[in-house]
Each structure stands twice: as structure tokens, then as C-alpha cells.
Amino acid sequence: MNPYVLATLLSSLGLGTTLTFASSHWLLAWMGLEINTLAIVPLMAQHHHPRAVEATTKYFLIQATAAAVILFASTTNAWITGEWNMVNMSDPVATTMILAALSLKVGLAPMHFWMPEVLQGLDLLTGLILSTWQKLAPFALIIQTSQAFDPLLLTALGLTSVLVGGWGGLNQTQLRKILAYSSIAHMGWMIIILQHAPHLTFLALLMYILMTSAAFLTLKLSYATKVGALATTWSKSPLLTATAALVLLSLGGLPPLTGFMPKWFILQELAKQGLPLTATVMALAALISLYFYLRLCYAMTLTVSPNTATSTTPWRTQTNQVSTPLALFTVMALGLLPVAPTVMALVI
Image 1 (cartoon, rainbow, N blue to C red):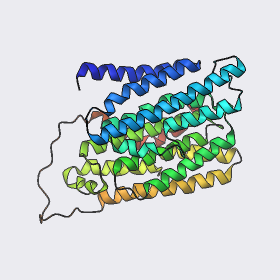
Image 2 (cartoon, helix red, strand yellow; image 1 turned 180 degrees about the horizontal axis):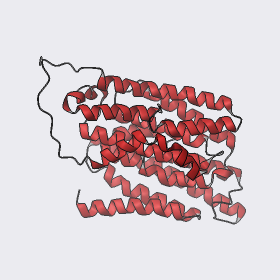
Image 3 (cartoon, one colour; image 1 turned 60 degrees about the vertical axis):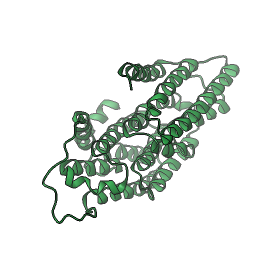
Image 4 (cartoon, rainbow, N blue to C red; image 1 turned 30 degrees about the vertical axis):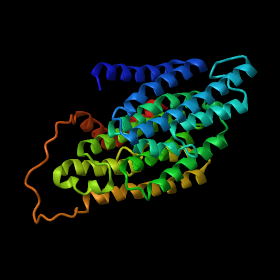
């Protein structure tokens, strides 16, 4: 892709998200979401592969539907209340429609069906943008309007997403689909705590972005898109294989890695709010997700790929890819748990 075109598209992505962040008016927020969608569509379809074009078409239709519902709901709310302000969401029908549309945009269950299929059709770098940056604008709107939503509905969405994200990833062999289901499960953790502690939603989103970025960049560096391809990575780059396994365990939420921090705080807050049953179900559902992360770790570090050579190759594959962002994200995805007390002191 032409570097000038790429720069324009990436700056449009930034502009759309910033516009949604800064807006308190529904029309401006809708405009930001539309700029975001239109900017990523050419990036998704740049390879001209049938799978990429199919994924782009699905993504565009889903996002356009969600944007249309947001516009309709905000217009309905403005018609009833006389205000376009996000804070004044008093109509229950409009509020429910907004939540459904934003859930569709970020891929919360049961509006998640497009997410694995779309992510599977993209290259890893565009998939990374879709899994991280594209979640920011809709989540900013969800956090801004969280007080208007029905708490029971948010809890139902959160539990469904965590369970679907866990169950869906169990039988997958494609890494991008596994990461898509991982994304759905993490969205559930963010949405369930939204009504009680929005700052924990923000913390969970931040940690999710760090860990997912590390996972995608690791797969990009090792050119792996299937579980079977992971079995050959140890002979090419042993250090990368070791850190990749730890990043996956961090995504699963195992201590003493970074991924344990948001889950720990969310379970603690749920118990504090008098919801021990919800906290228990969430913790058990996290174990389902942990199973497929362990499966990937097993394939990566404990299996040997079938080969005819009797000895390991004495050379290592040289790559011309930039590894600095990967190193940065990996360090943050693995070692931020010790700063948890500082984080809590800052956000509370």
C-alpha cells in the first residue's frame, strides 16, 4: 500500500476514535464511529484475497447496522427528551438499543458471531488493530452511558460473553479464531464490572490491549496462524517460544503475570458488592478459557513437530521484522502485577 494512503488511513483511525472520545453529543460520536469503520475497511481488503474481501464485507455490514441502530436510538431519545446529550438517556427502549448496537460493535455475546469469521480472514497486523484499537471508541461510549443501562442486562451480557468466549475457543485450530474468542471472553470481564466500578473496566481494557498486542506480534514474528505451526517455533526461536507461552498464560489470567491483575480486582469488587455467585461463575468460566491457552502452550513448548532429520538445525531463521514493539508489549504483558497496589491507588 502507498505510504501516503496508509498514513491517511491510520490518521483517520486516530481521528475517528479521538472524535468519539471527545464528544458528549450523539451525532458527533456516531460520526467518529463511522470515520473509524471507513478508515479500517481499505486496510482489511488490501491483500485482495477472497477471504479478506469476504471478511471486509461482513465487517462493513455489521458495523453499518450497529451505527444505524445507534443513530436511530439516539434520534428516538432526542425526540422524547429533547436533548442529544449522552448523559441524559432516560428512555429505556433507546438505551437498550444503544447497548445492543455497541455490543454488536465490540463483539459481545450473543452479538459475537461476526468476530471470529472476520478476524480469520485478516492478516495478523490488521487483526491486531481490529482487536485492540477498534474497541476503544465503542467502549468509551459504553463507559460514558453506563449508568443508564439495566444492571441485570449488563450482568447477563458479561456472563454470556465469558462463557461463549471460553466454549467457542475450545475446538479451534486457527490461532486468529482462538484470539477472537479470547477477545469475546475479555469483553465479558469488562462489561460485568461496568455498573460497579467503571475504572476497573478501563483497567481491564488496557491490560487486554497490552496482552493481545504481545500475542499478535509474537505470531506475526513467527509466521504462525495455526496451532500446528506453533510446534516448529521452538527450534527457530527458543526465547520467543518461551515468552509467547508466558503471554498466553497471562491472557488466561494466571498469577504472577499481568493478566491476573484485572481478574483479581474484578472478582474482589464483585464479592464486595455482594455478588459471590456471579464472581464464582466468572472464575469458573475463566478456567474454560485457560484450557485453550494451555493447549497452545502445550503445542508450542512440549511437542515436537514430525520431521525426518535426526538432529536439530544448527541455524536460526533471520527475520527483517521490527521486534522492539514486541519486546515492549511482552515485558508489560508479563511483569506488571507487582505494580498492582500502585495502580489501585491511582484509579480509586
